[in-house]
Length: 79
Image (cartoon, rainbow, N blue to C red; front, side, top):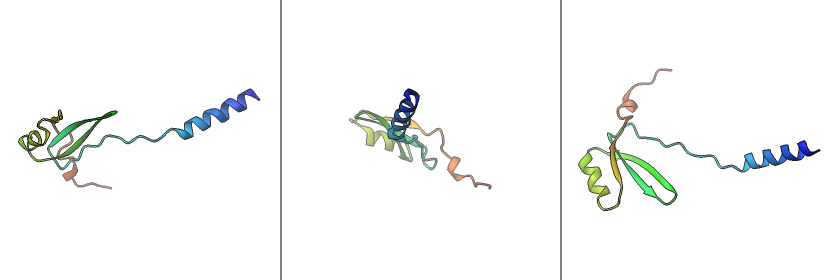
């Protein structure tokens, strides 16, 4: 009986866990910005130059970086 109660409790707790989103990088832009937010940070890729990114990030405490996945979105996919 105790095992059944623990099993039901475990299934209930697992079902309440919210799914998380994976961080994605847009492969069409060479520059990304890391944005600090309450509870963590996120990355947005939408800049074509480091100067453009730094102008947007100026005074906000954001960090500009190169996109490690730039160019991968331009390749044709073979299925």
